[in-house]
Length: 205
Image 1 (cartoon, rainbow, N blue to C red):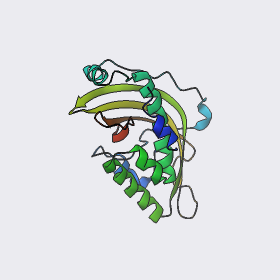
Image 2: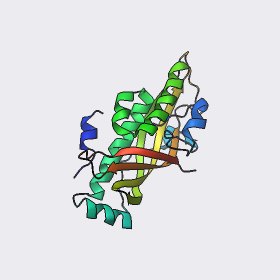
Image 3: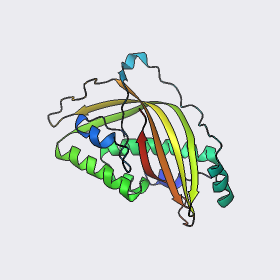
Image 4: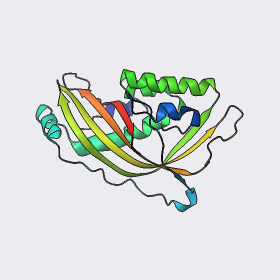
């Protein structure tokens, strides 16, 4: 069963704004995703198809499958990859409606604050996912009928940010930022809502 089906129907970032690094790079609560690795020239990168999602065995997965026999880790990871792309693009575009459908409330409030600051300063950002290098479940747990799955995304991202005058402000404009992030998705197993929502983000150095 694809738990992101409703999310995909719902419509449907990384931001490398120097001024927002203090927000995006923190592992406090659930900050927006951050591209923190060194950029590389785009002409040295050849586009490749996304690798097959990987899963790892955890007792938490067994507990989840016991509670929800229809849960399929492979389907979940395919949906998680789609959700990652939607969230990254929605954050860059300032699409609050899409983010509200995909994020837990406290995460949305953090993203919304960063978007508001960007809008106030007249800044814009364009993000493209060049390729998904690796995706895998690295942790799973069930606590009081609420399931948590942590997915590690390893991606190459192209990021271009401009100021209010339309001038590029990212030092390595047009470069590729290699990022590794751990996103935790959660779902209330007692709820009829099958959707998983993003509940935390941690940038890996």
